[in-house]
Every structure is written in structure tokens, then in C-alpha cells.
Image 1 (tube, rainbow, N blue to C red):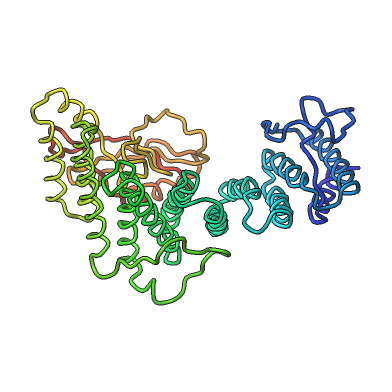
Image 2 (image 1 turned 90 degrees about the vertical axis):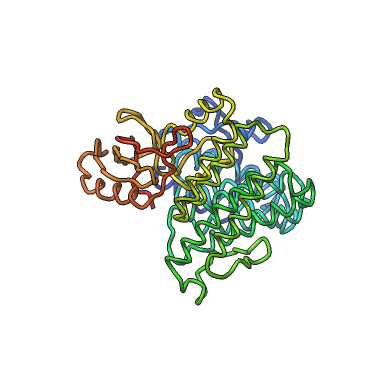
Length: 438
């Protein structure tokens, strides 16, 4: 039987509710498979060539047919076997087939264990993983919403697993909006706003309003406010008609009630002040960390074009450590190069961006980038990029990428290089723009 016919059989098997276990180990040639010698499905899946895939999938089919015949299509072992098959398909970049298999596993789990059973979690997470690779943002949002509802049914609000899921969904929502930013994509921001607000409420009720655990969600909610403010300016009519929401999407928290001109700036400014209060009142934070919190406020002002307020905040961050030359030197090192705003990292974490890497050399490699443009850019003391120089385009024949990369960077705002609290011009700052970046 040729390879195409075997693929067809796999699809038919999935539709007919069939399932199988991960039967592949290091040898796949003449081994006879039985239910009792199946390896652990959690073992790392191997990427196989086509001839081995042909053998492996035939054995999957044999195992699934036997399981179906002996114990019926809803045997509780079948979802695990389906998950194993899905991982094998997924590891060989056959994501659509993998998603269909995972959906069947979820279907059987719901029949056996209920609509909101945690047994479907691993398959739902695996679907999200494949959809991220495919770039299917609306479907991912719907599946995250579904997963979060499952968590709500099984965990108390202050359970770490539940809070981790809110955090994962929220972070992804911000990144998803940053990739698109279209008029109808505001649902990503609304989801993030509601979820971060919910997280802050839960942590405040559990630990108090000045607990350090609030630092990251407060900062991320402020970033969400910035994006919502930008969206409001770009699409003033975005709320007048219903946007197209992903299937199954539900808001997880009270509806965003921040309204009015300048409301998002005011709300975010309040959040920044709460961050500073937490840093000031907790004796465990060092002067350097408190100074970084003050600089974070400067970033906030700069994003909204309040240059003088931003420079005052940066200057004050140095005044916090004014009597310690070692700490001043540390701050100079921290702020020795520009940083694109808003930062997408944890509050005190490494500052990164999804598609634009700064401070890299021309010869540095970015393994996940299929196409990119290396630039040298001057960043003014006001945080504006100017004087673009194209150093490398990959692939080289895509010369049109240069203008696209320059326009991407031109629209961004940067925290400028700081020396002793004063902003200075940075020249020939290296950056890499990954294409596509939308």
C-alpha cells in the first residue's frame, strides 16, 4: 500500500473515532505490537522519514482497530492513545491532522468525564500549540477561553494553577494584538484587560494590595492600557459595531469600564503609582530595584508623549541611588542602550520583543527567523528612531523587505540611552526586524 493511501486511512480512522497508542521506539521494522508493550506516550516523539512514517502509521491503525473491536470506541484509554498519535503527527509538522486527532480525544474525554473535565487539558493545550505554529489567532483565543473555563470549574480562584492559566492567556493576548493590531482585533486587548484586572483582584484579596506578587500583573495591565489607548486613537469608532469574536470566546472577568478621553493613561498611571508604592514599602527591595521601578514610570510617560515627565522620572531613578557610586554605575550599565517600548517581559526580567531584536550584531543568528533585515539606527534622546542604514537582508533577493523593516522600526518608541539619569543620543544601534512581523 503506497504512502498516500496510508495517509487517507489515518484521516478515515480519526473520523471514525479510532485511536492508537505510541508504538514507536528506536526500532519500527518487524516488531509485533500488543497492548501490553506500548511505551509511555510522554516520551519525546521522533521525527521520522516517509518510509518509517508509513510503517508507524500502519501499526497505529492496527492497534486502534484492535482496541476499538475489543473494548469499544469510548474506552477511557483511547484519549491517551489519540494524544500519542497527535504528538507523532505534530512532531512531523502535520498539524491539521494532529488537531483533528486531539479534538477526537477531547470528545471522548467529555463523554466519559464530563464537559469541564481536566482530562481534556493536555489535548487542548496541544491544539493551541499547533495553532500557534499555524498563526490561527482567533482559534487560539477561543481555545484559551475554553481552557480557562475548564480551570474555573475545577480550581478555586487563588489556586496557583488557575492563576498561571490566566497569566498565560493574558500574555498571549497582548502578543497576539501586537502581531496584528487591526480594528477588529481589540478583543485580544479586552481579554487581557479583564484577565489582568481579575488577577490583581484575586492576589489583592489573598495577599493585600501592596504584595510584591502584584508587580507583574500591574505592569502588564498598564501596558494593556497603553495598547487600548493607541487602538482608541487609531480606530475611534471601533466600539460602535460588534467585532468578529473567535468561536467559543467569552470574557473571563467584569467588562472593561475604563472610558473617556485620556482614561487609559490615567488608569495606567494609577497602576504605575501602585507599583512604586509596593517597591517603597517593602524593605526587601534594593535601591536598584526601586530605581528601576521609577524608570518604568518614565517609560510610561514617554509612551504617551510626555517627554518632560519622562525625563524627570529617569532623573529621579538616579537620585534614589545618588549616594552610592557603585549603584549609579549599575544603572548606567542597565540603561547603556535603548530599549523598545512597551517592554513585553516580566517586571524585572529580560527585556525582549516578539519580532524585533535589538542590540544584536550583524553576524548573529536567529534560528527561528526565516526572513529578516539587520539595521543600524540612531535613537534620539527623546526615544525616536532616525537615520536608518540597512546592513543585511535575508534572503538577499527580498530587497523590498528593507523599506518594510524601516517602517516597522520608525513607528516604535524607545527608552533612550541614559547616563547619570540624562538621556543621550545613541548612534548606529544594531537591530534585527523579523519578516513577516504582522
